[in-house]
Length: 80
Image 1 (tube, one colour):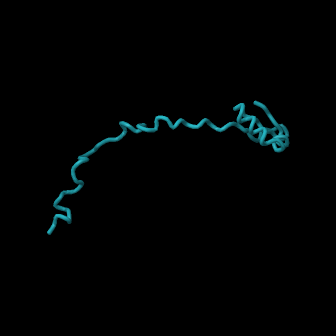
Image 2 (cartoon, rainbow, N blue to C red):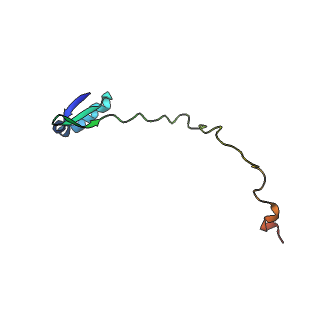
Image 3 (tube, helix red, strand yellow):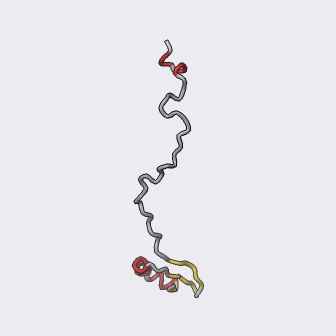
């Protein structure tokens, strides 16, 4: 891993970040020879392919899905 002093990193920050983006290799930033930060590329984005249908087969029907949820005798609309 390439190492760079913090003073040089500060002076050339944008070009160093571009180098990291292009090469994909992280750079270790040091202060008086002691590592203080590691600059690396971001993680690869997750593929959005396949999200449609990804939950297929995970549902469970536990009761009647067609009939009313309560007894029709409890409905106000049917009372006189």
